[in-house]
Length: 213
Image (cartoon, rainbow, N blue to C red; front, side, top):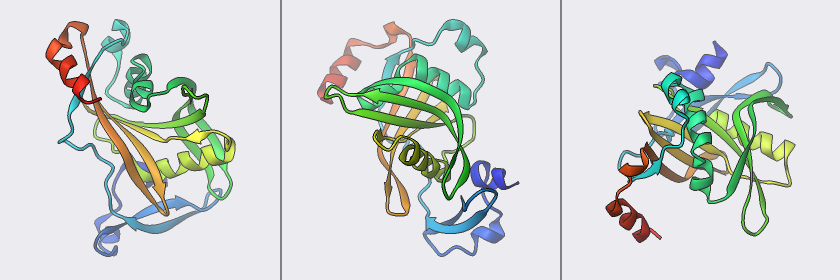
């Protein structure tokens, strides 16, 4: 039940109604098997429908595309095969581990959907925790907070750039980069990528992308 209300569904209306206007309740870890209710700014982490869409030639193996489900594992597979983290962040990224389960001081057990490491042209190194959502699931700020805590404790020498991946519809994926500001999680950047056949990227598309530079 705790897992469901922390990550999967809204709290009951009777609890949400006690939050002041503009704020909402979340359940944070307070140590091993301990939790506490916390009031935070009510900013849903959902895709902005007004953003432009960038077409990316789909490199997903056909057999994967045929049998994939519309869930977080399908999102992660498409992100991985199409190097979308590299494209989004502008650095070379490599998948280090899927479903990393570990403990963090003061939080207890936490889990990250996938952990990437990366390097840029200057040699700076990064750790990129990724939370992925498919279907009707939404990105969850508690999980983003935990990802940042994992990186801070386990890989303090690397630059942490937490990312969220959200299926908007078939082959359209929203990517977010998050940033922690005080006690809040905010969206630092957001891009939408549509996976298409190579010939679906037209000359007009390429001309439009050049104007973005």
